[in-house]
Length: 377
Image 1 (tube, rainbow, N blue to C red):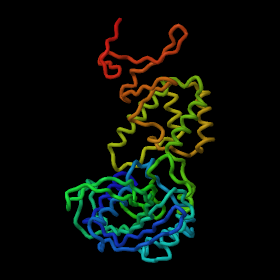
Image 2: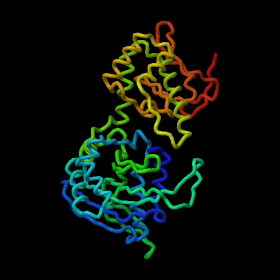
Image 3: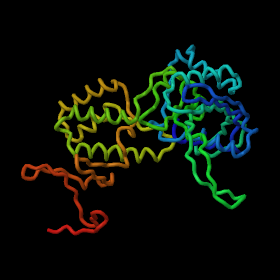
Image 4: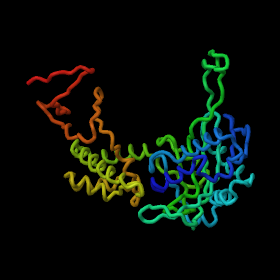
C-alpha cells in the first residue's frame, strides 16, 4: 500500500465515516492469562468510547512505510491451503462474528508474543464502499463496484498510572487520584487484507510496529506463518557494516557525502508522489553510485559479494532504512557535530602535519554555549 491508500483507510476511522460492525477485545495479564473478553457493536458504545477505540486502530496505520508499516506477503500455496492465511480469511469473511475464530487468533498471539506486562488485543471489522475516482482523482457519486472488507488488529499495552492530584469541579478542590490501569498506544498490529490499487489484495497484510528496531518477529511468524523481515534499524546498521568491510580505506567522507546527498535528493523527489510505493535500492544501484564516487573496481566487486552474502542477490532495501535524509552527523570519541543535511559540503577532512582533522567551514554566526564568538585570522 502506498501512502495515499493508507491515508484513505485512516480517514474512515472516524465516528461519522466508518461502517465498523463490531469491536472485540481480549485483555491479557502478565502471566498470559485471559482476564476478560468483550464483543460490542461500535454503534452501541458512547461516542467518547467509540472515538477512543477508533483512535487506537488509526494508530495501527501510522508511521513510515518500510519502517513502521511493513508489507507481509503470502506465498501462493499459503493462500490456497495455508492454515494461518485461512484463519485470517475466515475471520474477515465472518466480520469477526465467529467466536472460535477470534479465540484461535488471540491464542496464537498470546502463546507467541513476547511482551512484558498486561496488554489488550483489539479487533475490528469494516466494509468500505470504495468510491469511483477518475484519473484526475475527482470523486464520482456512482454506485461502488468494489466493497473492501477488512479487519484491523492491534496489541496495546495496559499500564498502571501513577497517583496524582486532580481538580474536582463539584467541590472546587484538588484531591488525590488513585493509580489506575489505562490502555496505551498500540505496540504492534496489522491490517488484512491490504488495499492495493484501491482494491482487495488477499495476498498481503500490512504489519505495524511502534518501534522500528523491534518488530516482534515471533508475532509475524505465529500470525502469518512468514519469515520476519530484518528490522529497519538493523538494515541500516548491516548496510553500513557491509560498506565498511568492502570499501575499507576507500570509504572516505566524500563517498559518504555523495551517497547521502544522492539518496536524500531522491527521497525528497519521491516523497512528492503520495501514490508511489516506498523507494527501494538494489545492489546494482548502490554499486553504480559508488562507482560514480571513484571507488576502485576491486572494492565494488567486494561490496557486491558482501551485499549478496548478507541480504541476498535479489533483495532490495528501502532507501529510508539506509539513509536518514534529515540527519547528517559527524562523530568522534569526544565530539559530535550535527550538520544541516543540505550543507554537508561544509565538512571536509584533512591531514595537517600528520594529524587528522575534521574541518567545518564557518563564515559567520558561530556560537559556543550560546555565546557569539569571533574567529580571528
